Image (cartoon, rainbow over all chains, first blue to last red; front, side, top):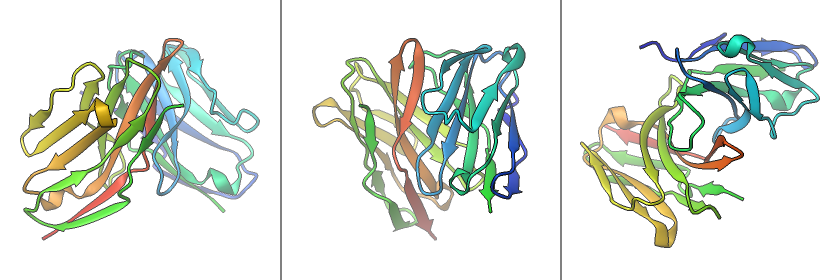
Length: 115
Length: 116
């Protein structure tokens, strides 16, 4: 079974530029998550989708971050404009559903460096 | 608010030693789930175990074992006879459910290095 696919693996941009990340979840998984992992910290949830609807985006900095999940499958996360503190690994995860008992499967992440 | 604390930032042991990773959590929920994930250098988080708040039985899977104690709000992870391949960052996480949404709250992680 294919895992969660993310691209690109690495990205370096200058501050104030924009960037987009792509995620393809495991086939059949209704729930998709984007997490931000700053170096030396645990992942922090940015946004959660159930199919193509947003369930939780309470920790998403909406003035600069946006995300969409068209047709309830692939998802993109965009940052515009980027700040230095956005340097982190952005992890996409998916699960069969949103129940607390369901484990999430993670992609390898996109490492973003803002200079 | 939910919180997960992994007080050990880094642990380094020699191969074949046993090692325990500590995890303490805070929650006001009566129903919750606890997880352990492993993050190897490749970056992805690999699921290791899930435990629900009503099941305090310890679990053993090969060289891995988990000790869940609600009385002390702890969910510790022990690797017996450690191997170099166990080197990774390990995260403990707590799942809360709000308005039908599952949210994993992670600890800071423990970097485990197994030396040959």
